[in-house]
Amino acid sequence: MRAVVLSGPNQFAPADIPKPEIGPDEILLEMKAAAICGTDMRILTGKKTKGVRYPSVIGHEFCGIIAEVGADVKGYEVGEKVAVANVIPCHHCSSCLRGRTNACLDRKAIGYEFDGGFEEYIRIPGICIQNGNVVKLPDHVSFAAGALIEPLSCCIRGLRNAGTGFNDDVLIVGAGPIGLFHLQLSKIAGARKVIVSEPNEARRKVAQELGADLVVDPTKEDLAAIVNRETNGQGMDVIVMAIGVPALVNSTLKLCKRGGTVNLFAGFAGTGESTVEVNTIHYNEINVNGSTAYKLEDYLAAAEMIKSGKIDADKIVTHKFKIEDFQKAYDVCVAGTGLKVVIEP
Image (cartoon, rainbow, N blue to C red; front, side, top):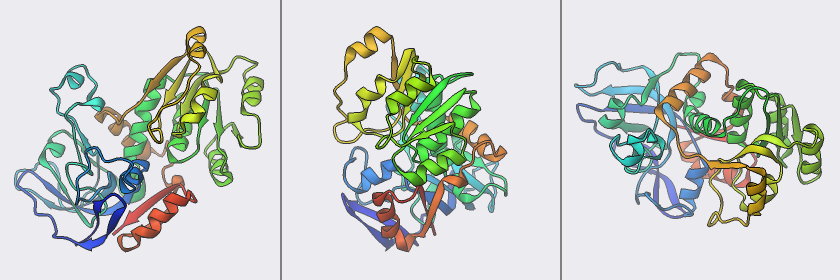
């Protein structure tokens, strides 16, 4: 079968590899759509190496059709459309025992310990199936939307941490796929007004189409003045940083209302270090938190939102490429000319 094999930092290419053989407690999934994540890009370029195997197949946002079912697997049949939550917590470490399965200290994941989505057939391990991570999808959900359940579930975890609620004023910094999911989730949560800050014109247009109350080009407009105007000088109740630029953290904190929350959702570039005026946090009692991965409950909630049409995932998909054209897909991601880029077999 064909797969994109990662043999080292900046070393990846389509290649022929053996089709996986499954055990009695496993499923073989025929990949129909696998989306490229920002984390995938950091792995491909060598900026992220922790937990990465060489050679291996990465990709953790995927959806497909069940091709084979192990003899001991119950409840699944060949031909069913499914999406798979790639993170498998251990359920016995200190984080899991405190209910923080998303921050499991000994988690396993498809795309890391197990080969991932950028291949024609994916072996779904038994521990993944037993944990309830394989989710059936109806016919009306596209394969691409099924693949995007995973990043949406991460955003749901971020929204829970941010505490966005009824009548809140929300600022989303960055209108990439993640920012656009946060925009939609904020509206569903009851936000009074959602402002999106994004320098890219095409992304601002999509943000408008998905319901942003106001879109701002921070390279040409004074974001601080706009926030001051729109909130009567109070600042934003919730701010989600959906772009990992350390230099923006301090100026973003200053846009937050006293007692408000800033969620540092994105993985930040370089060392992730940022100079912050701590008194802004101290005197304004700003809550600053992060967000990592997702819990299974978040993934199941994301799946239901996409099934019901409450979240428009297809709107975020701008490019589709075959496995053989992975380099072209990679180049689009590097150039930032699209939103979500999807690989098909």
